[in-house]
Length: 454
Image (cartoon, rainbow, N blue to C red; front, side, top):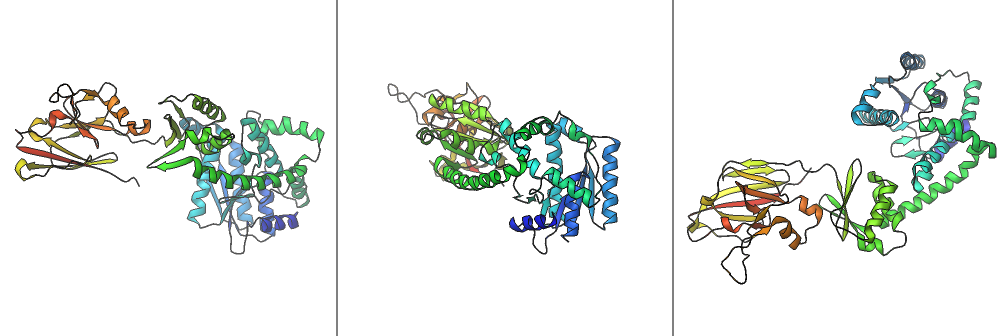
């Protein structure tokens, strides 16, 4: 097994002289065998043990066992305790997901802090097969079918060549001690249920199932690489980035036969499910503007021409008051700069980012806020053909529709108000009631500019 181990880490380029692994060690059979192989092969390792405090005294005894092993082998060992159940409740996560998130965030911190090369986990061949079926049950693409990789970003799995029975035989042959984790038999966890029920059934058809899958995984990894190259081409063809959003062309998607695969790969990394993707495809047959879908981190907002993907971390602006017509104020992603001028010494700008207003018609404090249904104004420069001098009242929603602003763009529209009256659709048009006239003596000049997000 030592020979296979060395061949595997060489083949997948997961160790070179000078490297040091952060080895995730639980005290169970797999991680203790991985630690033993690293020691006998003289691979420098630092141990990292997480006590999730899920099994009472057993969890504490696992921690003591690992600390004793580290001392005995003169290894550096980092250990941490998490209140996993409380964290899972607070974050609305399953225990499995919460534990995974906690440990990998901590592993990443240790790796960076101590300048270690890789995070090594003790996943093996049987884990790889079980993960395949877990992914298939949930619904997956090619990435899920090729299952666990020997190397993925900073994480390596040096035991992926060996199955569970081979690891057990090696442990007994080398008198390796380990701790049994009773939760590995708890069938409330999906993986344990697959391990205890599905895998024995499949092995009735092929007792050597895990080793038989090696060739399949190699082929699927190659297919995944080829497919990834195609996905990158799809991204260039079907979507464009604009500001902080991604626009996916409905027209281009509708022209291809493989639209589901394209949409799956464009949206899956952002937490959208297969069911949601099917719903979006059905929507595309008869698009209605304003429909949206949410994942945990992103949303899809629909116009007739585009699917607009944006982060849920949206600008948190409600109401901002502006007390005087001087100086600058940051309003979320917009900066407003105020100044006042005598009418005779001022040149009026017609640029949309500039508002030139009659100062005496404004009642401070002004209010900066998002627009809402029912808002209206009298667009400056717009009048009835039958009565050129009469101002035209227009709903903000109709005005934005006339400009053909997409749903995401509409959400970012802000108003500057004096009392209950709209003064300026910021960055677009002022209200005629506050425009400069013959009786104006002083001008309030406002310039809006975008603030670049870090």
